[in-house]
Image 1 (cartoon, one colour):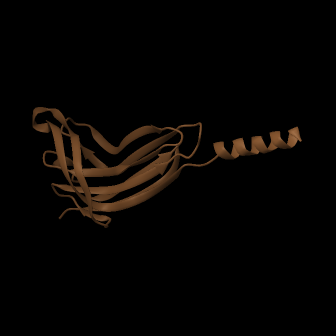
Image 2: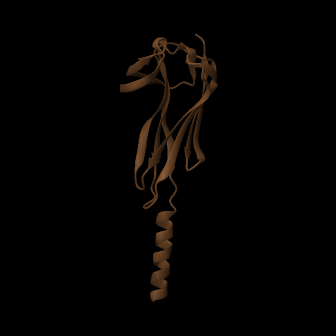
Image 3: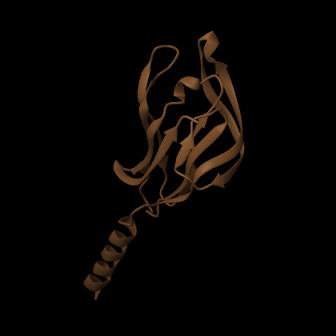
Amino acid sequence: MKRILFFVFIVFLFASCSKTPTAKVTDYGVYDAVVLTSGDWRLGIPVSIATVSGLKHQETVTRIPAENGRYWGMRVRIANPQKYKAVTVRFTTDHPEFTTPDGKKTRQETEELELPAGEAFEGPLLWYFIAGCEFEFVPGTWTHTVYVNGQQVIKKEFEIYKP
């Protein structure tokens, strides 16, 4: 009897530890938001997004004009149902090469976070075409990808064009 209970316990423990994280796109396309930036490329200070508020999905599209004030991408939900183990979530945006005013050439932007056991992440993977950063208004295929523990779980392509 003790062996059966021990076996049931081991099976239960293995099943609870082996649950795989889930990932889904909740919406994608263009968004409206209030975006505040800091920095000024003309002064040699990199521009960064200081805050984003009032984010609202406007239209479900994958063809996006490269113009000032255009905010686009996708929102995702990643859930980690594991009871004891955090997972690493990496977000990448691959884009045609552009050169920043400080001379840096880039083709990819990456962010990473640790998602604790039993937790979920809901949030945007967006790009903001903003005044002062016109060097980023590059047409071509831009791809947002999400990886969990190094494994690709979401991939969404957008076609950026000059209006």
